[in-house]
Image (cartoon, rainbow, N blue to C red; front, side, top):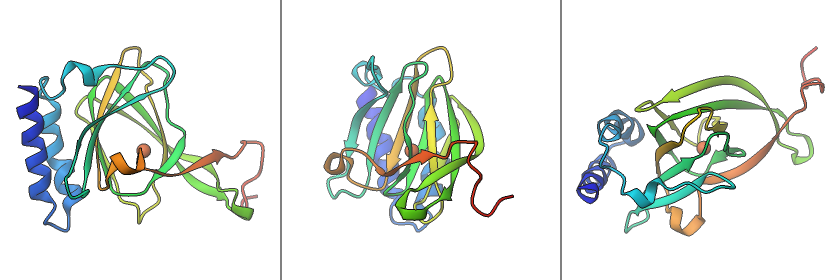
Length: 181
Ligand SMILES: [Fe+2]
């Protein structure tokens, strides 16, 4: 059952690729797959003890998109990062907490950022990003149970290893942000 559920999701994405609003289309359709408790085989729900774990579920044969499951134990988090490609994310299980950032200091390539917004996502909540817009963020499992999210990236994840374009450092809060008084 799990394979056919995933296959249906893959077909839906393939059909969406011909439209210029591909990201919004996938974001609209993702919740109907997130409610399906058979979407993920048991081996794709396994966590790691030291950091969040990535399972690659599918890579398009032409490299146009990839689907991964990220599995997080409570407290596990990403670095502050942005993405090389468009991305649609939906929570399959548990709760995820996102902090979004803006660049606060880019002198000498420091690329330091400061938080500008926070948001929590529960099961079936969806978010999306396109790389042309600022999309720097950090994601954490803020709940007390396992969290699993399904990510569709507009790139070949198997080649790159992940979709992270760059990692950023948070500006210490005591340091005044350039341009602010
Ligand atoms: Fe991300």
